[in-house]
Image (cartoon, one colour):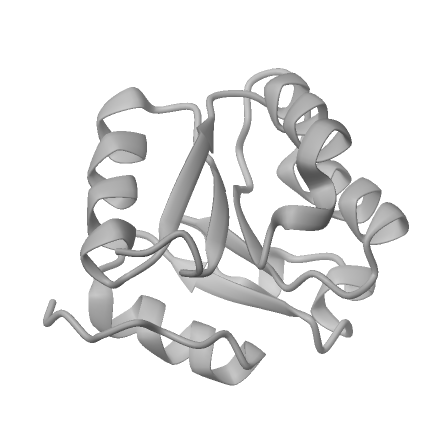
Length: 132
């Protein structure tokens, strides 16, 4: 992986899932920074927001709704693609998020194949593919 690989911010409160997803993203050719809460993600985006090529947000964060975090990031960085990850159905997204072409949905559990599909739909270049 090079310093020119796309940088992803992964926001996931479950440590094991966060580590597994980060490893998978790195295998796919991305650089990854992680956050375990909305507060940590907000600090990271405020510090290096312009550097992220995409943000993956768990919908069910303990300190704040992932949807609220997505709206805040969208307000500051309208250009950055956001992927909402959830064990719930995509129809649970509110209309503001569901109608935004720069927001994708990733159903849990997910793997490389489903990540590849959502990234392709959002125009996020992938270094190389990994199978589910």
